[in-house]
Image (cartoon, rainbow, N blue to C red; front, side, top):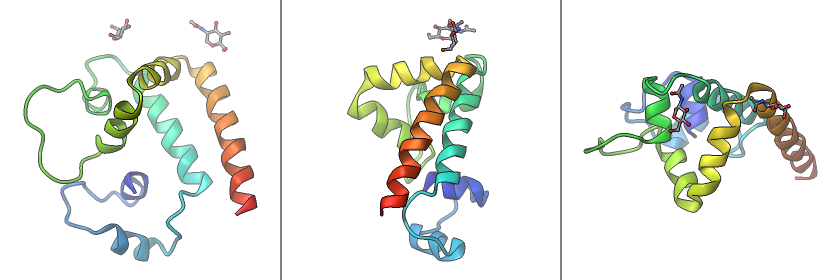
Length: 119
Ligand SMILES: *[C@@H]1O[C@H](CO)[C@@H](O)[C@H](O)[C@H]1NC(C)=O
Ligand SMILES: *[C@@H]1O[C@H](CO)[C@@H](O)[C@H](O)[C@H]1NC(C)=O
């Protein structure tokens, strides 16, 4: 949903339900391969930025203090980190190497597409 919102340029402060966004897109809930690819490449893009990049700080969650209520773009990163912080760190580190990240995302996309075809 974060990806769809970004693609439609809906600010996370906008009070839009996921259902209304999906209706606008006219898509199924399942993340499309295109969206998944964009998500991965966008993540890599951010991770290759300097450590003072605001977007990188937001995604890696190196922020102190209060966080606004409601859904924010950090949610998916939070979930990833919560489920396994070592894995998040490794993925973030991997994304900083462009050619390594491309190998990783290509493998992920092949897997994703294979599973899309089956369903
Ligand atoms: C950014 O931070 C990471 C993790 O703390 C560190 O490994 C890396 O060297 C830093 N990069 C720069 C350009 O300062
Ligand atoms: C980046 O990844 C490539 C491909 O996996 C590897 O050959 C290369 O040594 C890596 N570069 C650095 C700086 O780690």
